[in-house]
Length: 338
Image (cartoon, rainbow, N blue to C red; front, side, top):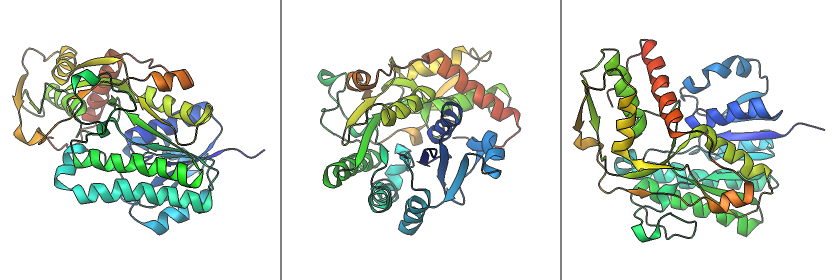
């Protein structure tokens, strides 16, 4: 019996690279990752030898904005599973590049699903939407359930509404097994430095190394978030496609530790020997025009379907994130101060 084949768009990102790690360890699947020719491979460094030998992992070059490359990838791979994780994923950037965000996230999703419909209609497909689709949620609707009204608060969030709806459309119109997740805040090692908790951890590591003055630049610290660990997130994604997948289903997934961004920063600072010397300074460039400031999920539906529960503590996640950036700093890299 031939081994299962899985196609991961966004394999070079935080989530995609952790998913590849999980599948290498827990399955015998053949793994194919979509990769732009210019994509940094930092998150896959530990897998490069396997990739070079084409030992269970292969990179397929393509771009969500190029229809032919997506068609060719799906046609060549003929995947049993597709994890569509690739996106322009930074909300702040979407305010200055909304059209790029819409093109990548909405039309890119449509290209992936159309290629699957043409060349692999039996694939089990995960479309990664976002909790940002809910946007501005009134307190009386917390915790957020799947049927909560969409009220996106950024072009990124609007693009993820499109992603969400495109996924369900393909499931319903073409009888494809497409499932959609709205993942709430998730983080850990390899998190991009444009996201709040990761830029805080990076700045702390740089301060400890004497690379920058002892001042952390911040945006909105009052926003409330529920944090999950990326390693719990990818387990959820695996369970999504392997435990009684339901075509057209959609789920909220998230952690169980809720706190303000300030409380998260305070915990990161508590881990540093420099904590008493570090000052906090608001950077106007880090503030969004509007913010999705109440992001607390109700994950009952997904738990009831799969049994998934988050296992990694908030403290472990933040410690691992800070240590990741300390390791990056030790490599004597030069970083943008963002």
